[in-house]
Image (tube, rainbow, N blue to C red; front, side, top):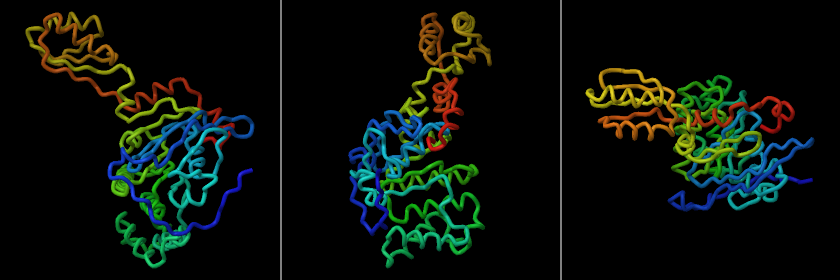
Length: 345
C-alpha cells in the first residue's frame, strides 16, 4: 500500500524557466503508463505524454476514456500499475508534498465555499497553500483584479454566475504560482462568452508565466481553440496525437471543392469532373463539387490542367479536429466501459 504524505506545504519560489518553452525541460512526462483497477478494468493502457512550460496540452476523449485517471496519477492520488510519471523532476507518489506544492489542480467539481465571499475563499486557500502571509492580501487582490472579480470580491460566491465562479476558482488555483496546471473540464456548463474569457485567461497565464497546462475535455472546439498539442484517448489508449492542425490534416474525409476556370473551358471542365462526382455550376466557369475525398483533390486538379482547362482558383473546405475525432471513434461503444468502473474517466 502506498502512503501519501499529507503534511501542509511550505512557501516556495518557482524555479526560473528558459525564455523559449521549446528548449525547456518537460514540466510533465508520462512514459508507458498503464493503470488497472480492481476487477481487471484497464483505465489507461501504455499512455505517454509530455508538457513543456508555456504549453497547453489537451486530453480529448469521451467520458470513460481515462482522462481523469491520468490527472489523478499526475497529482499523486493514484499509483500507476506500470510505467513512470515525472512532474518537474519529481515522482508524484514518492515526492507527493513537493509535487502538490508546485502544481495547481482545477477539478470538475466545485472548489469554492458558497457561504464565503470570493476574497475569503482565496485568503483561506492561500493559507492552506502556504502563501507568504505578508503578501497574501496583495496576491489575492491582484488575481481578483486580473480575472475581473475585484468589484464582486466581497460578495458571497452563492451570488456568482457560473462564469464568475470558474474565474474565481482558477484564481484560487493560481495563488501559489504553480508550474503545472491540471484542468478537468474547465468550461463545463459555461456560456460561449464565459468560455472565451476563460480560454483567454488560461492562454495568457500559460504564456506569460511559463505554466505548463494539461486540460481534460471532451469539447472538440475547446481543444482546437486552446491547445498547442492534443492527445485523443479512447478506452485508455492514445489513438492520435499532435497539434490540432496536424491532426486535422491527417483525416481524409469527403470535402467540398470550389473551382473557377476560364468560361470558355466550361465544357472541358465538366467532362473531367464527371469522372469524380457531380458538379454544381454556380456561374459561368465556376463550380462546386461535394463529396470529394481530400486525397483526390490533387488528382482532380491535375486532370483538369491536363485537359487544357485554365484554372484560376481552387478552394477546399478545411478538415477539422472534429472530423478526425468522429472518424476515429466511428462505431465505438463507450457506455459499457464507463458503467463498469466510474473511476476510469
